[in-house]
Length: 101
Image 1 (spheres, rainbow, N blue to C red):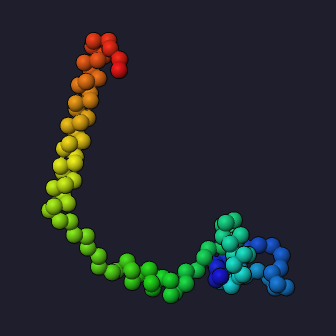
Image 2 (image 1 turned 135 degrees about the vertical axis):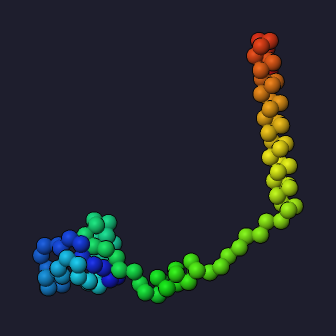
Image 3 (image 1 turned 90 degrees about the vertical axis):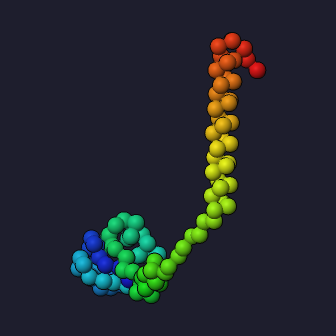
């Protein structure tokens, strides 16, 4: 995985000095992941992955809602709000009478 050094580690890597801050290095995934978690390096996005993400973000999508579905949703909402109102009234009546179910 190609990464950019943010914090230069001390010592050697494979017998060579670590690159300076801001320089790139290709590391094995297991090494890069540990350094990413420690915020010592920043990942360089793969050009193919970036191009695919841009292409999918630019893709046109549309959601079509039919009147029937909207009417059904409105009816369900209306009946739910009626039910809520009735149960509140029943609870209020029971509370004022001091009765329990």
